Image (cartoon, rainbow, N blue to C red; front, top):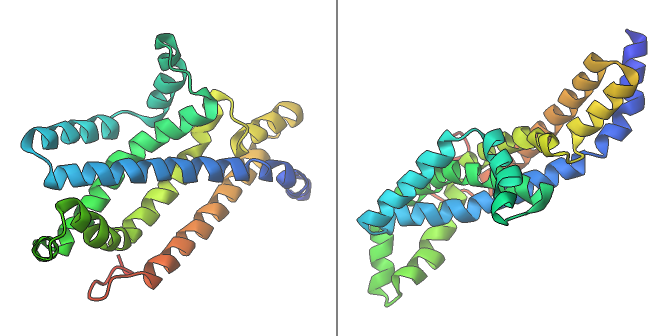
Length: 224
């Protein structure tokens, strides 16, 4: 038992080399998902009926495709038609597209909770629909969506080991390299799990704190 603990402690620094890559993948994927998710949410609420059907199909597709399958489609499939994004960008696109379908629901709920009177107030002041959305609705919606965004961020963080499937040297990839030479799978996988658990807790409580600081007056979001 002591030898196992000592081995884990000895190799944690090597595994930590993959932490930055895991965080970069998570941040970039969630950022892509946020941009697409907000766009989809606005179209779902304010778009024409045909456009609402299109974005509904978009959500249906990317919520239904397993992330690993989508990652393989982007990394292995798209190069056959001339679209080669490389391993890191392929992972970001794959995780980001899946995340956007879920984030769209988060932002849609946040926008609908604001109420139509604020849109009407903006239009009555001479603002365009786009200006009202961008200057009045969106800032409040982003703040209201922070609890749901926190959950989505941590989910994408836990999905980041899928990058190992296309050879990116994140935490799990370094762990597999150690297992090949040491034949200690339990110790290494346990160390990888511990690192991801710590990362999960750090970002969960970080975003929970941010959500409490930026909550919209009149809305109780910290307990969600």
